[in-house]
Length: 110
Ligand SMILES: [Zn+2]
Image (cartoon, rainbow, N blue to C red; front, side):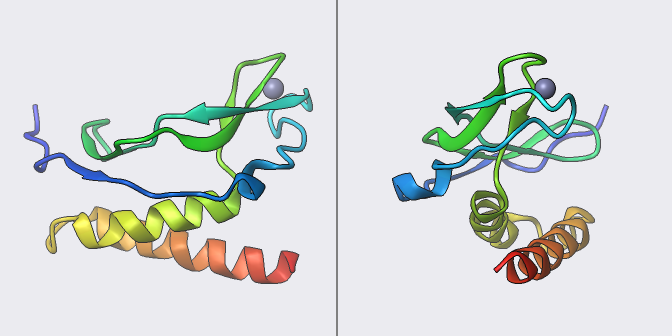
């Protein structure tokens, strides 16, 4: 059993436009409906490290119940989460890579 880092909270505001087009489910191709989701950032042992005090805009598949955050929302949340991680945490590198990937992906998407 690993003791989790102290749980930090973030509060991020999003424009309604951020969740305007949830697209289709990447797992089953079903229809995604816009929903508000809790944001939880967990470590490799599934220990909660950072959570959002407010739900964030996301989507949920009607068919398989998979939940999604779009790239823009994920990027904002990742950037808010990174500075809260313990400087020695191995999660920092993974999160930094995720941010870099999202920035490249969003740039390519226009
Ligand atoms: Zn689905």
